[in-house]
Image (tube, rainbow, N blue to C red; front, side):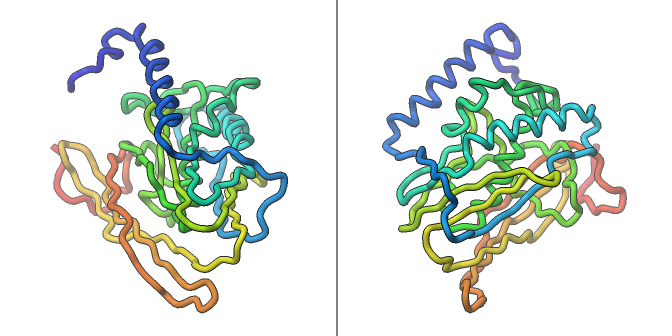
Length: 274
């Protein structure tokens, strides 16, 4: 594989990062989108959906201190998002909101993936926040305009029945999570931590019309280029909130990622590893 210039000359990385950050945020100024920036002291009256994830993952194979640092980083970032309003025709950008979350209090070192390798890094672990928010937005009428799945899944899901392919990775200057409010409603994101969980909730200023359910279909594992690939369809079912009847079922996307850990021996994998 051809190496990037910054891999050959690591001292160029800070310069390259500053260049990318400048272009990244300058583009938001001139891209004609209106980005969410208004907060409210109170939550809107209707809770549209809520979800949560476990803060400490004890199955990473790394020192638990990095999980504790991740929790610290998530708390800092969450404070820059909690109670944000997403008005009609506005775009929610995760990086636009948490850009200065560490301005006063710096992040700690958490786990992150760099060039396919899991390492401790400044601000590591924020992908858990983007994962959670992406899953939250999937259960709403908001339009997801930017999402990037992880190329490599480094750890198994904490729960065996957890949905697959509903993650969203972020990298400042490169990858963002964005949703646009194409409705006539105002939405609001709430974030909190309690009993070992990080909880995300979506509120709305009007009564709920629809319920959304996310499912997996056609899950398969196979070898390609001597790597184990997980492929799965992510499907959304829309129901009338009052009548509970199914209105539609649609495949949102097919997610593919490389499996970076040992799968159970009884799991069927198509093909053979060379």
